[in-house]
Length: 139
Image 1 (cartoon, rainbow, N blue to C red):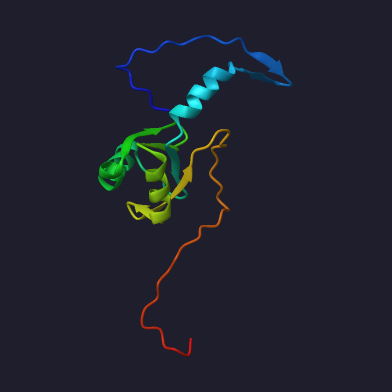
Image 2 (spheres, rainbow, N blue to C red):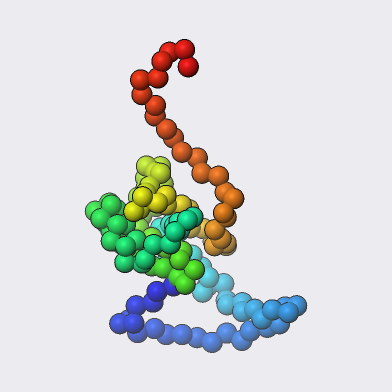
């Protein structure tokens, strides 16, 4: 995730443990609960086909949702974008108003929740509402 460099951060080390062939870390519950609160009003978005630059996604997202309560756009190294909103109602409104396009590419939006697995499913199906006008009645 993009971490601002102008804010001081207090980091604490948690000893990893071995689980099978993996090393794992299990922070105390209060750490995870604080993280859950910090991400409560967040959505995760990604693009199925071509990747877009962070600056483009940030500019488009702020232009569309900045006045509706979008506070910050973050990204990780796998090109998942994290949209932090002012409250949960704004998140719901954005999800319900979709589908959304950024630079003519469909945006996949998911509401963040604890234990969300970040994965881009290339075989996923996307529901799209289509309005057709002037169709002859026999169809």
